[in-house]
Image 1 (cartoon, rainbow, N blue to C red):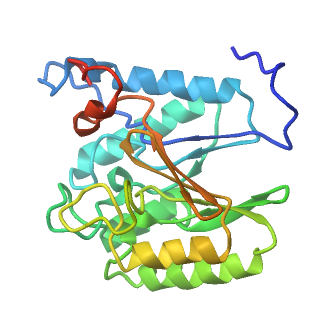
Image 2 (spheres, rainbow, N blue to C red; image 1 turned 120 degrees about the horizontal axis):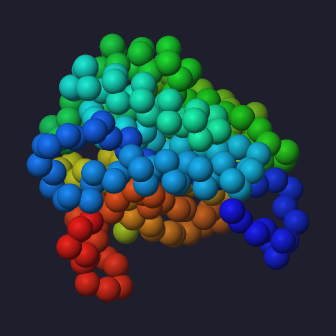
Length: 262
């Protein structure tokens, strides 16, 4: 599928995709945009393209499914079908927890419930710990759970203590940090309460301070379904687009006119 002969030799190659949003068959139900019916088919194409690249590993950076955990029966059904599709495409990703996977950030204006003890325990049983790290060559990859940050669960402080220790122990490696919720989109000082698309303080400042102290090579987020890029001192900061649909609130940022079907 891909001709990589023109690319320079690399130590290794990896793929990060975000917000693939497997959706249960909507049947005859009306949808916001009719082309959303093709959402799961587009997801399969993206997964097969990732597999065709034959990378050393793949990371899914949050939001495996369209359903929220609030709708228990549909959520678990969609997650089962989602994982079946991933396996059928021949990849075994590292997973990052997103808001559609475990719940929204602690903001009363968010469209879904915040992360509960029950859902987080289920996620840890199904996928393993939602914060962890792994090495590939001289690179150290750190996966964080952005959805619990600023919350009241004891896991919040457990994760904070863990990453501070983990970064200190791997300070000599090239460090990559992966999380679902962007710390910010346009400016580090932008507001967060009432804003669906960024990480609130104090977690935002805490995380960005760590990024600077340890001279993290790259910080990667998702969630907004649109690509952003910035530099934080020596760190490259990327927010990933979705391979299946653009959120209506961001389609206005395209160079051309907004499409009729997002």
